[in-house]
Structure formats: C-alpha cells, structure tokens
Length: 84
Image (cartoon, helix red, strand yellow):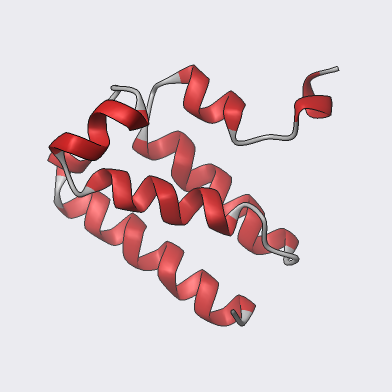
C-alpha cells in the first residue's frame, strides 16, 4: 500500500479513537478482539509497523501507544533485537 494511503489509515484511526474513547483499552489484544472494534485497529497498526516508510512506522507506533496502555502490546510490536 502507498505510504500516503497508510498515513490516511493512521489518521482515521487516531481521529476515531479521539472521538470514541471506548476504543481506548488496556486489555490484551486477544481479549479485546472479542469485545470491541478497537482490536481491528490494533491489527491494522501492527501491519503498518512493517511499512517501508519511517514516517508511517513512527505514526503507527505513536498510535499504538495512544490506543493501549498494555506494555506487552507495545513491546511486542518491536523486533526482539530492539530491546538489547
């Protein structure tokens, strides 16, 4: 997908999350998937973290941190060697 389209997807997620605070949860993604549409956002954000565009990756990581306070979800979004 084009980086401009990826950025548009991230912007949509950010705007919807700002309007619908119920999308902001601190449960693990496996549980949230059964409860709210927010899990779909997490899945999209995790996919966008694999982008070749540094800007998209940065915005996706920022959105992930804003959507969840679960440290495991945030830490799991980075390659294992990033924490060494």
